[in-house]
Each structure stands twice: as structure tokens, then as C-alpha cells.
Length: 292
Ligand SMILES: CCCCC/C=C/C(=O)SCCNC(=O)CCNC(=O)[C@H](O)C(C)(C)COP(=O)(O)OP(=O)(O)OC[C@H]1O[C@@H](n2cnc3c(N)ncnc32)[C@H](O)[C@@H]1OP(=O)(O)O
Ligand SMILES: NC(=O)C1=CN([C@@H]2O[C@H](COP(=O)(O)OP(=O)(O)OC[C@H]3O[C@@H](n4cnc5c(N)ncnc54)[C@H](OP(=O)(O)O)[C@@H]3O)[C@@H](O)[C@H]2O)C=CC1
Image (cartoon, rainbow, N blue to C red; front, side):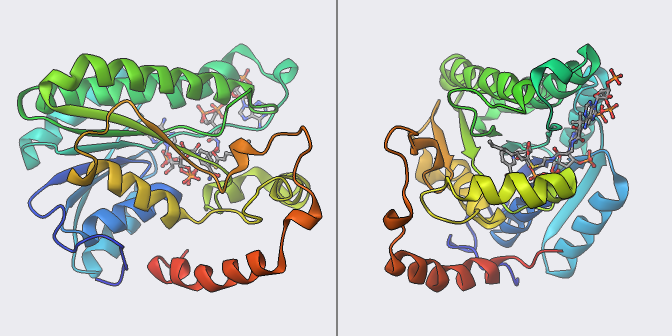
């Protein structure tokens, strides 16, 4: 296995974990990490080429992976796909609800269809996946669900549809954690900040050249996060190390959600030692996962 996880190599041996959006970005990275820890990984997404490619990478690396192409917004397709997964692989131990995305636009420029497309991708789809996995496996056998949301605290300007959906997903996480705890099912969330993922590259030049440099200046850690820095927290939440953790949300954002504008971060807060520290830790993170 070439993926260098911080966790024990047989952590998920004999277990099956679903990763939605597993064909690219954070989901692909997470699929690699879970497979490196012994899991049989099920990749879900719409684009078959990307799913196939991630599956091939994992298998070439000595891991186990399969894929099912489905749009998580389609209720009947989600139900049938989960049924197929249970028939093919048996118990589902973990679900990573990572599929999603949005387009940058101010609220006044978002059509009803645009709003619905984003809300159904980032809220309804995750609910459908969790409900079906619960009904068809976890309510009998227990399990762990991790929902990926976003840094939407105090609003998400230019991505208001996504902010509303992610806030809803956090509330869903908390409700499901309470309702499903007695079935031995834990439900948690991870809120990534700015992560240098392949998905982030999809927003075009304006976003890359203007928005990202501007946002980087507001992050106390002075850099964007890497995909593996989200994956390791997902892995922790799926693992027995988090056996008493449910209904929690872990912000993985280099401190950006804490950076109040009131007496905000100044250049002199970024000490030279801090920059040196980043240079020291970055190579290890990069070694964990080679980006495409
Ligand atoms: C402060 C923290 C920042 C956090 C940063 C977050 C980063 C990330 O999440 S990284 C990347 C994640 N990946 C993506 O975002 C993938 C790219 N996005 C999408 O695929 C789309 O946004 C989607 C989720 C809406 C795709 O859904 P789909 O059903 O394929 O959408 P359609 O193309 O059919 O369009 C439906 C509807 O939406 C309108 N629309 C789509 N794009 C835009 C746009 N760029 N601007 C305005 N409107 C858009 C589209 O026009 C349709 O509406 P109608 O025209 O009214 O029918
Ligand atoms: N990168 C970042 O900075 C941040 C990312 N996030 C969130 O983290 C998650 C992963 O993002 P990231 O890896 O960066 O971006 P990607 O765009 O690479 O990943 C999104 C994945 O979701 C899948 N997907 C999207 N819609 C659907 C759908 N309707 N049905 C099934 N699969 C779907 C896509 O596959 P396909 O197109 O094949 O269906 C793709 O593999 C997303 O929810 C994203 O919004 C949150 C905060 C910050």
C-alpha cells in the first residue's frame, strides 16, 4: 500500500465502507486511505470514468474497491443501489456522505433550479443515502456515518444555496445521531475549510486568481488544507477511536472559522517560525496521497 495513513494498517479489515463522490478529490483520497486500512471500499458517483479510475488505482495498490454509478438525488436509484451493495457485499459498516458541490453566485443570481440542484446535492442526497444505509443494514448491525459539510458558519456569501444546505446537513447529523444512537449507529460531520482539492479547480480562473488568494489571507494557518487532512479526520470518526462520539462536527479549516473580523488577523500575526512549521509538515502530508 502506498497510502501512508496515520492509523493502524488493519483498522478496517473485514469491513465495507461507502464513500460517495469517491471518484475525485476528497472522496478519492478518503477511499484510498480506507482501502489502505483494510476496508472494502464502495465508490459512488455519476461519472463512471472517474469511479473506474479510482477503483483501478486502489486495486493496483493492493486494496479492495468496487463502484456503483448513481445520482444521489434520485430516491429510487439510491434505494436500489444500496440494495445491490448489501446483496453484493453484506453489512455496510461505514458511510461517508461526501458527494456534493455548488457554483459560486450571489443569492440574487440563483434561479430556483440552481437552488434546487445544490440543495438536493448537498442535503437531500445525503439524507437519502443515510436513510437507505440505515434501513437496509445499519439498523440491524450498527455502523458509522460521516457527513461532509462546509465552513458555512455565519453565512456563506456567494454560495448561499450551499450554506443553507450544509447548515441543514448539520441539523440532520444531530437529529440522526440522537434517533439512531440506540441502534449502535454514530452520525458525525466534518466541516472542511479551504481544501486544495481537484474539485476546487472546477470553479475557473476568476475563482483561482482572485477568490482563493483573498481567502488564503484570512486563514490563521496561512495555507489551504490538503485532501488527506480531511480524510484522516473522517477516518478517525469512522473508527472505534470515536466510539463515544456522535452528533459532533469537527471543523478542519486551519482555524478560518475562528478568524473574527473584529481586530482580525494581521500580517505580524504570521510569524516566520509559523511559516517554517508549515514547510516542515507539508512534505509528509503530500507523501500520503499523490494528486492527479
Ligand atoms: C467559504 C468556504 C468556501 C468553500 C468552498 C467549497 C469548495 C468545494 O465545494 S470544492 C468543489 C466541489 N465540487 C463542485 O462544486 C462541483 C461543481 N459544481 C457542480 O457540479 C454544480 O454546481 C451542481 C452541483 C449544481 C451540478 O448540478 P447539476 O444538476 O449538474 O446542475 P445543472 O448544470 O443541471 O444546473 C442546474 C441549475 O443550476 C444552474 N447553474 C449551474 N451552474 C451555474 C453557475 N455557475 N451560475 C449560475 N447558475 C448555475 C443552471 O443554470 C440550472 O438552472 P436553470 O438554468 O435555471 O435551469
Ligand atoms: N474542497 C473544498 O475546499 C471543500 C469541499 N467541500 C465539500 O467536500 C465534498 C468533496 O469535495 P471535493 O473533493 O473538493 O470536490 P469534487 O468536486 O472533486 O467532489 C465532489 C464529488 O461528488 C460527486 N457528486 C456530486 N454530485 C453528485 C450526485 N448528485 N450524485 C453522486 N455523486 C455526486 C462528484 O462525482 P460525479 O460528478 O461523478 O457525480 C464528485 O466526485 C463536496 O461535498 C464539497 O462541496 C466542502 C468544503 C470545502
